[in-house]
Length: 130
Picture 1 (cartoon, one colour):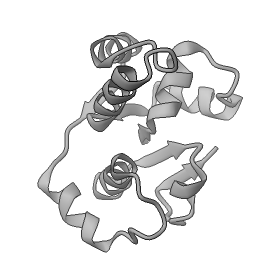
Picture 2: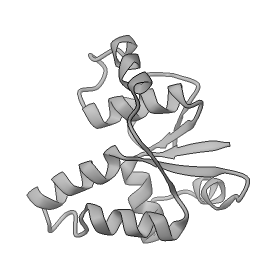
Picture 3: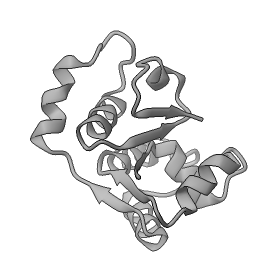
Picture 4: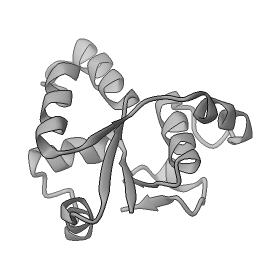
């Protein structure tokens, strides 16, 4: 199965956070699954690191390095991902990073794993709220 991790799930997985459920740990560690990060995640991390380094102690380069060591694959933004944005209800959630990840998961037939209640409100089959 192809899995796309939301940014906070990536951070929890890399840091060994107890916020990450055993179910998600099992999904991530299952070698039958291909684990992806969206290229928007390091972008989001870099913005947060620049603004609030005390809350986001790593930058995008470190995140990408850790993700590479963990065996996570990178997912670029493709035109097909962007074209799906027009079908997304913008009123549910205002986060453009989340919007593109939702569209990436849909276009690439991936399961997006998130802890974000607003993403879960989209109620799509390719979103797993944990």
